[in-house]
Length: 435
Ligand code: DLL
Image (cartoon, rainbow, N blue to C red; front, side):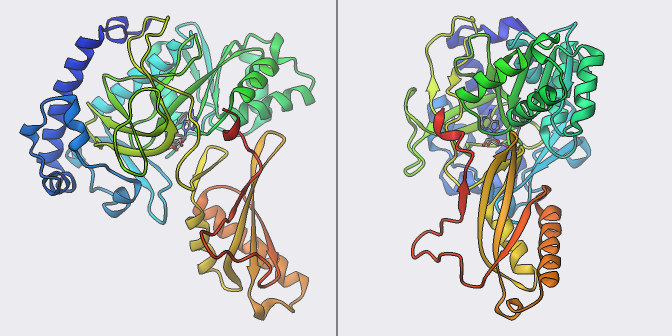
């Protein structure tokens, strides 16, 4: 096991380590990040009063919205000169969320991702085909650091280009595939269309995450690719992938608790819930330097599993993610908020901000169709004008969201108005319901 002494540390010792690290992290945040010193003093907490892990419950939460307000540098706890890498993902509206890494943070990322891959049996001698996107998204680079730290051979493919993915897989005899679960299924279909027998290939394991998937989808991926499919979890705000992952027993994701402290809360009251009770996952970083977070509300729904795991790791696990309690959609691994779509529609002349988002899965790949009302003035116009406007909105959406959509203009006032909460999302993928 990678870093076995740490991963199998007796719980009491682990708690002592977490306590010491929490105290030091709170002191750093108080000293170095005005946003947090203000929040702590608003909550009447001094760093010296934080002496146990239970004290965490008195500390304020951090939300995605907070991050937006202090974009881009407001949560940096290190000198900008010590930051060597930055990643970003979509925020609720307008501004993205920023994660900044010092050299020590990159080493930490490599360490926790090495643990993630090792937990599913990957190691030196493996050929890891990394088809998560490289760039501002944390998936590609995070898995990459884990693979090289572990001593595997990493093929930095990035996402897309299925023809090349498949030929590389065959030419190199790839043994481990890393990508979103929907892309894994897409690749399986693509392979069978091209007469490639993946179960007969050397491929034996895959590490999938960045979007919701179900046990049913796991069974499908395992059968069609002839591999073991492991669930891996993480988020930009905390580090990227590497917050936790499944071991060979595939029963819950081990959280790397010596670096990331998990709590489950009641999303309405904020009260901390005991193991086994379903609620919102809240994470506190214990060792991050660049952008540490205190009680970050992930919006992800799950529960904590504190029974010992037969693998010997002493960390607590979370159940496979069971959905989110906000309206963030994840489309082909990219986070999309309806508000971002709305902002684009408000900007473009000729359309009204009355819309529906129809999410579907075609050939295992997510698609997003945006139905939007055209303005009255345009209603009588020629088809040519309407088509040009559809392409224009698609272009604007691609620039803002980073994904291709299909825009369909509909008649003015044809989208049902709602008297309460607008229900603008039709998600036909329904993978989150069958966990
Ligand atoms: O998706 C980090 C990542 C990359 C994780 C590659 C795993 C593999 P973000 O783009 O910030 O970071 O999106 C984070 O994605 O809050 C969850 O809602 C969702 N998510 C991530 N992993 C899983 C998973 C990356 N295994 C958001 N199951 C999170 C379900 C997941 N949802």
